[in-house]
Length: 510
Image 1 (tube, rainbow, N blue to C red):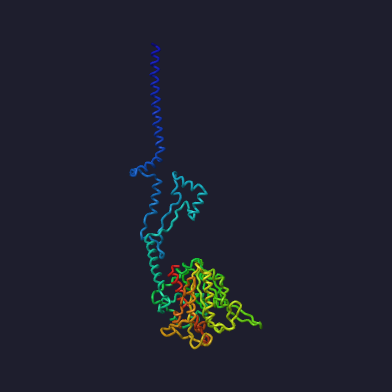
Image 2 (cartoon, one colour):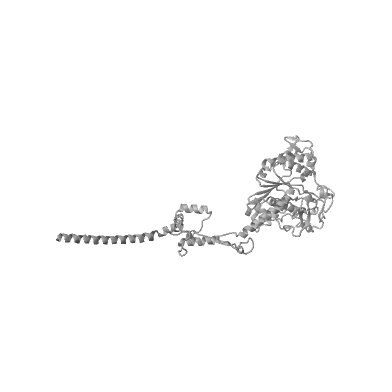
């Protein structure tokens, strides 16, 4: 009986123990569940968001996501047209903050933390973004509004329409028209005009010759924009090659481009040379545009030389089958402007006696016109071989002289002329040299722009230095014995030649 009672008591005690253990186990499992849920809930929320397309709007997003999206919204908000930045004027550009790295880094962003803490990754980040971003300040950059982009596209479309019209225009058939906005730079303001062309400073009393603009019949030339010209020259070398007429044009283009520079000291001759008749090579550097405008003297474009005869006397020669020795400099240029012409009318050249040479043979006599054709053909061959696919080549045509009663060396004059020619046979005169040039150019392989300024210059008997190639201020009686009726006063006609170069660049969108 006693044994039975003990057995019953033990069974009851075991059941109680099991119940207590079960209850403890359940409590353990319950607390384990609560703990696990608190730990796993942030990770599970990711899957909840993926499964539920419409999350409960009452549940706040994690703070990190809120910060990031608020900043992204700030970046992607459209900018009103009132806030577009101006190229000119006092209005500042609209700027939008770019997030600095601390804004993007938090406890959950392991990638950002790794990038910030790993020096190698940080260096790579800085390299790819070009410049390091400060960790304690925001970087501000201007962002163009849609209206800015639309305006720029509109300007491009307008420029393309104008360029297309210019490509179908004959620039060289037209007339000179009065324009009070001319000249494009003030007389005496440009230090690169040498004395021979500085007519106003030399005492020329009239100034009406300065107020003329060339106007083609079929179109209007774009207003010369020196800044735009320099932008188109950025990183390039523009080289003028030829005689003193090209030096006349060279000085003109220096003065025109100088007008675009707020700081004139950013333009200078690379070797410190001052422009004079005696020197035949100049390089002018424009620092802000990393470009140069250069001049190389070459009277004929083919090689001048000297022959010593049996008696020991030396005579000049011209090798019409060999390119000028300065051609090595031509090769380094991106844009070339050539000319030759006036020296072919000088005594020894026009006479052709023991002067023209091919190979080692000096012709006892040789026709100057034939010699000119062969020289131009030699030059054209050099262009074909050396200017393919990489250079823009201009040839500036013959510039008219206006001597009365003689030539440059025989008493010819042009002083007292104050107005352009308006009618007469001279306006249609066209030298044989230009016809030969056109024939040679037609056979060239390399495209060439012929600046055919001959008829343009036919009008301008009024614009030569005449007696004002030297300073005559204060001199009671000016000598009229030797007058310059070939070159041009500056400002003056060569400015129009350079306007035509600019027009060609504009038309080509170069």
